[in-house]
Length: 557
Picture 1 (cartoon, rainbow, N blue to C red):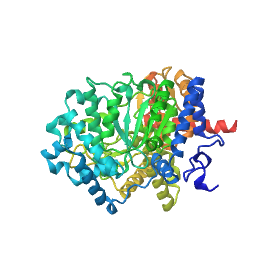
Picture 2 (cartoon, rainbow, N blue to C red):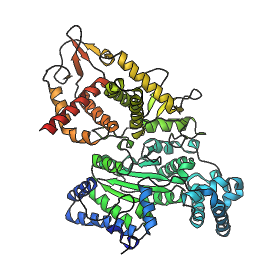
Picture 3 (tube, one colour):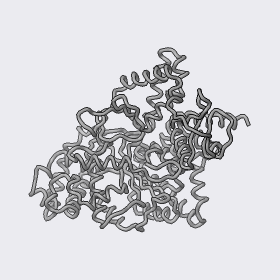
Picture 4 (cartoon, one colour):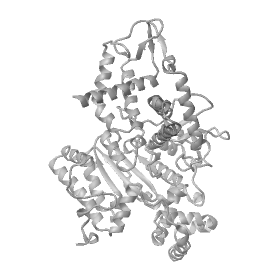
């Protein structure tokens, strides 16, 4: 039997994706865990879900299977060369619309402003969203104008919708964060995050107008039009839908009328009933959509692990460590920038890599010589501390390798190196890499000149340590120190499995837990025998060292 004639589950494609029994892997562990968390009946239905994916793949040709897997994992070719066929596709689109537009809202819009409706860029957007299928694009354009009239009225059919077109209830719905644009995956595709448990609206029309606004905002990017977006529906824990699916059908129909290609769709849940409902939804999907759909079952940590297997960093979910509460700071900054100046592109994800209106927590920010508290800056400072000895003892070439490795560590978490745009109080300009190298080199020189800078940044305290305090550098038993060592042992496996950039989040979660208990991080003051409260940065360095020591101790035993 030739390779092309084999069934999909009998072989792997070029990515090593295999639907057959084989030696256990990490994803097999999580799949088995999912089954163990269900009843026998639910487990049977969950396995049926896996079988549906195999069936969908087997219904495609070898080339189509390979293409779908590359799309889902974000390793497909970035752009198709449109120049060879776009004119022909536009002619086909015009011909089909000419025969189908009579009596439709599309015809009304064309009469109001033919330049808007027939604009080349506008029509190409629909062709890209439908992978250059002229018939599907024409059908979607007719539906698009029907929905636009229903949502915003006939007078706004031929204008781009801005924040000014949303009423107060629409804006309140947008501000809740039930729909967000948290970042990009590692292949630079925009991610749209849907949080059913945060749905809050006065009427369903508020949510529909909000979805229209976000979808069309990301479509301002030609790159997004070409490559599509990754949609994450996250219904884990408190983020499960409390409205019992109210409005889902209307939302689905609206989404199908918007020309955004959903390159991959991930649904996360920790509820077996919702998992089974997702299984039912898969059954009615067309095969090509079903092949791009992934249904995941598990806790917050398990779902974040599963995300990483699809090229999506765990930090992309704006969740606080340990508590897994939603952090809306970045979303509210995005909302505010749209509110202030909606004539410009409001998403830092849609802009080019030269100017970014919004920064994310993983960016390294340079603000006129001031020390930035952003998590990306903290991560870079930790890297400088950890690698200072290697850097100082290395040759010129080795130093460059160290610096380039640090840049990659920041970029691996989705971070960039940004500075303020002097022409705008909201914009950020990405710094060229040659200048980034100079800045990091200067950080190493500063660290070498002031080896005790971290200690000097602390604060002298009066009195003795409290019971919830953690004391470094001295044998001092306390409830706070015991709690810290307990948390280190408890989370050591998780810490060791992560890359350097993600380990900082585990350490930060541990620090926050100690502080929530009323504890401080202290060490003996170098001069007067008192106590010094160390900075969070120094606490990170010390706790990271404890994690490393714990790993070595575990290996010896």
